[in-house]
Length: 416
Image 1 (cartoon, rainbow, N blue to C red):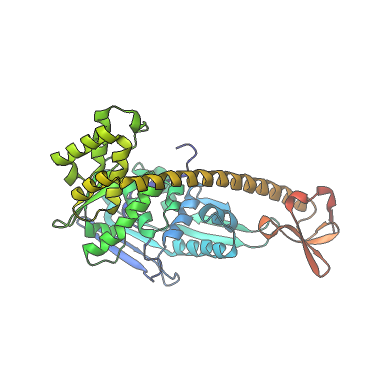
Image 2: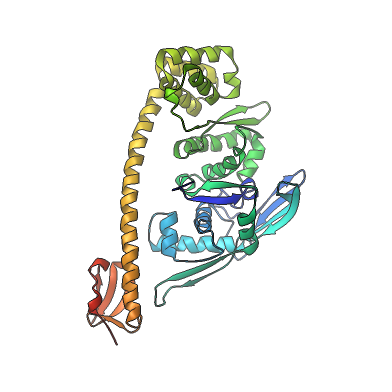
């Protein structure tokens, strides 16, 4: 877990959605019926609607602190969630806090704690307080609900969720599926579920399986592409049953293992309906021995992402024509782009850390000279001090001048 931003979540809050994928609707409540009870989530007339994917990112960013009482700024939350600093994102942060403050969650015999089901009720955020202007600049305090926080801290029925991976999923359906299958693949490799039950978990307003399939297929591709969670789906239209199979990553180099083990892993990537067929087993074995692991691997990925009907015939054609060459090239290019992104992100973080240290140092100097109300710089009053406004801003007559923080000198300060 080192070097990862992991959020500890009680599995009940992953199994049952507390946000909706219908971001632009005015949905204010929904209920999920189970044989042993119901789950209900709703908000009040004081909120515009239930939380969405962006709101969930904000909540996860807060829970990373592992504190019930959080002191922060909109700037820090916006940078953590959106990677950007602008008033537009500040507004989104406050809107998210408001939505989480008014939400109510009720488990009627559906909350599972390892020894059975119980009735439970939760709120998420009790309150928040924003002080836009004080001696230290903006201050935002947030109080996480005590019962919700205690449940996350003490639960033995939990899963760690990777915050950075969650952020990479731009589609709300992808993000919600990531929550569900992070939980479902906790202790098993195969998950079978009725497609309309899955739609309910995803908060999709779909009447027909075909509508659900149109939503979840691109979501699976996005999850497989952008996260370490990788799985395949096989759909039985007669039973309306989805079978999801985890593609395991065991930390070994699959290209250096023995032929039989490599072939077994390739077969496990395929839907169960295919891998149990002797002709498919022979197809995999033959191409594996002739072309190697990577050749078959990328053609399986291409088939899983693109074949809608008759997967066996499509897979055979893919192997013959090497359709997988396209996806292999894309992954190589994506790896290069990701490596460059990491380099740029490291540079950005280094710059941000330097700015924060400078900001804190300059603010201490301002405090030492009586705060913004009394401190002067080069004999002029101080208007603001923040990297987002250009550094230290002073009022020189009718003009305002911005001085970069790295150019601010302590000896230039004085007091009224």
